[in-house]
Length: 627
Image (cartoon, rainbow, N blue to C red; front, side):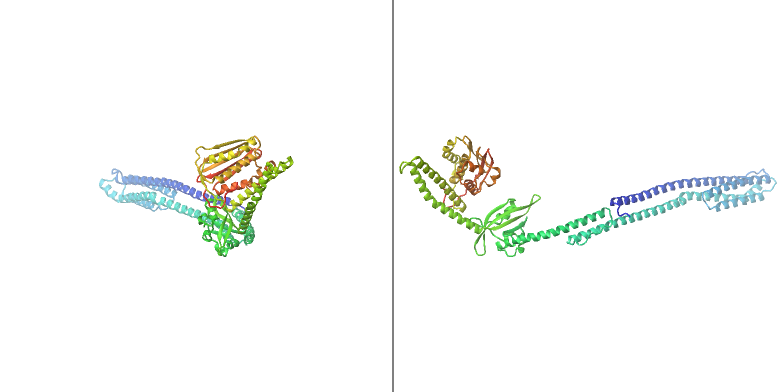
């Protein structure tokens, strides 16, 4: 009947019932104390009245005694009448006491009867002891002895009765009242405690039964058993919790099924994918490795690698075939810095053959904390071999093309100069076109040669202390004719306190030359080109700015790609190879610097590149850049 009652109402009712019991017991205690107090006051009043009555009776007994012992001149008849009247007064006083004793509930009236008997004996003795004739002193003394013993006995009995009443007032009735009250109060407290325990047991059993079912269901679900649901026996909060728990269990069951399917799918993908995959936790221990990665690294079964330190299982080498320390491997670098690593590394197979892997490693971040890293391994040995062969072919072809191109340029210059005779206007135009095309072809061949040499690592780096102000001034002077032809303003600002930097002037000069040539080429006549060189922290930062055509935003991500030219640049300047920015990016990054830019179409572009104050590192090579 109470299945639909909310749990909070049940608990509230239970606590209210317990509070009512406690309040009832407390109220009864207050009333009992008041009852004891009022009963004690009534008892005290009754006992005081009895004591006063007994004391009055005692006075009457003393008067009777006086009546017996006094009056020597009286006759016997007068004496008897006087004694009889005094005795009647005593009996009346005793009758009054008997009435008070009965009203107060006292049933022990034996002492009162004994007093009456003693008084009756005194009257009889007095009536018999005193004749009608006058009493002489001798006769009075004789008669007094006959009556006095009885009156003295009655007086003592009255004293005893007074003492008994006083004792009863001090202990008996009060103790009885208190004892009755204590027994009743204990009974009420026991009943209240039993009721509270009963209510608590009932409510606790109802709660614990529901919670025990939920606990059993939770343990079952934790063990992966979703076959049973939790029975719902009420509509209160426990029942609602059970209903919600069943819904959660159903969703978990569906989620587990989906996860099982997804896990099987992921495992199938990991097994079938052509790249190797390795995942490690924050302690650099392997948590996942597919068979491809284990095969590529010759580690055997991938499952055997779970829980092992990855750097203890394989060794990588850089481009110079030098062993890379464990703390500088891609995954270790990612875990330490949180930055992605994408580069080519060497690996020595068991047959002593070097294999090249492109390793793309990235951090796994959870709530802003690095909890692991994942790396994709791709065997690029054949690709690098093909690139090397391609680079060598381009280098060889370009080098071989230089000789005939140089001859064509030489003969076209001779024709234009008239060494073979004067040319008519049409012949002169054709000769100039041949000369211009030859120059573009030579520039393209030189660019291809430079790219192939950079990519193959054959470029010689010969750093020497260089004054950047003089280097920039020399390049600007070489370009002065072009800026004057295009009526452009060229602004140069180099920090006066700039120290000499150890760098290869041929390589860095090529960077300045390409950036300034592009700025001049893609800035309209009358435009402005500026160069600023300054020191920032531990770097030298150079800035080249123009107010030319700019680069479309959607094409900016491809700007440093090989052979790429922006669509608006192609329309304005058809002459170009798309290799200049690719080349200078390779030079800057190989020097330990970086390059970046900002551009807005129609408003111009700004390029920055940085070089460490420590300068460039020397490197042995076979050739230098071709100008």
